Amino acid sequence: MKITVNDCLKLPILSQATVVAGRGGLNRIVSGISVLETSNIIIDEQSYKTLGEELVVTGFITCFDDINGLKRCIESFAKTSDAGLIIFYLGIYLKEIPREVIELADNLDFPIIVMPKNRDDIPYSYVIYEVMQLIFENKLKSNAWQKDNYEIDAEFVQAILNEDKISLHRLSFYINDKVEDLKYMEYIHFSGSNNNDLKKEVLSTVRDYYYRKNIKAYAAVYENDIVVLITDKFNIDQGNICELIDNLGDNIISEIDISYLDGLDSLDSIISAYKLCRHTIKSVSLIFKIKEYYLRHDLLFTEQCLNLIKDGESDIQYYLSILNKVEKYDIKLYETLESYAIDYNMNIIRTSESLFLHKNSVQYRLNKIKELIGNDKFEFPAINQLMIAMSIKRIRMNDK
Image (cartoon, rainbow, N blue to C red):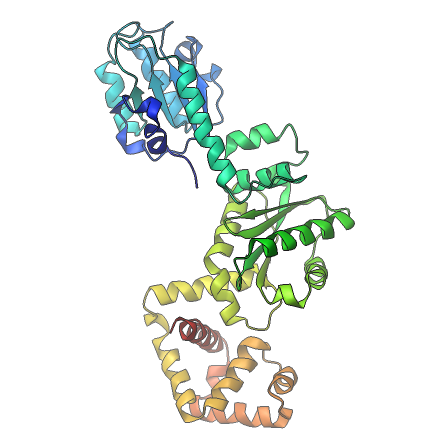
């Protein structure tokens, strides 16, 4: 969970503070807090360097009489995605907040918060302490905050997935790898259990496996699942996933679902990959029942099916009706079609082995299906639509 300006306003020290502008930005993320007490920002906005998502506290003591400078200040903060501005000592140095500044902040949805007017007995440190304590306590509550030798690795994963630029900047002093060097993601979902001991065991096994391979892997529990990130300094492929699965063992594998995505090259691509996993992981296993792990195209296909379900499936009603026709005629025919098309990639031999049938029996059933629905339904693009329809039926069956 991320801290917002609204969350900070609930702190006791800010209970008497007033939001005077930018209410539309109260949901801005707060990852840190900084002090501005120099006129440089007023003179030259390029002199103020920020990582964004910071609450800025100031009294504008050295520049309270420069209205245009104050406006440039607000524009600069908003441009760099800072969270908001807390003004102290109003009425003592800066007498009033100019109307032009308030209007600008409202237009930019940039919050301006004013501490009690004409008071000089509330120092910056009180607000800084409580805001930072709130941020720190939020980190402690996070599943990714692991109190062991891998604490920094876990916080690195958390900071990436939270898009916490301030933490990433701080961690850069401890971690040799850059976010843009991260190329591979493994996402491990606990499908059958929410047992914390099991999660610790899986996390330990993952870390031990990559340690023995002399591969630096950043792994952490995050939002109840495990996320592993690896840089392009190492040659990772699907063989590593298979080895990792062997290390985990059958008992654990029955409790988890694993996705593997490569081709990452930026923070945005990592976030997109994570969201794709998070959105589809519970449904992808319902479609691809026999796969040991899932690749990006499996997840994207699942996402397409979920979107069709959400939109009412009108685009594939014709193909659903065809499948219903096969199912009503003979359920065994439909099960054969499912196994052949989805599970075994149109491989008759593997389909026959899975169904304990002779390959000629499978071919006979497929021929019968073609008689019912037409040969053209087994050709592109109709076969793709049939596979989507079958996959949706698998998802929907689990929802009943």
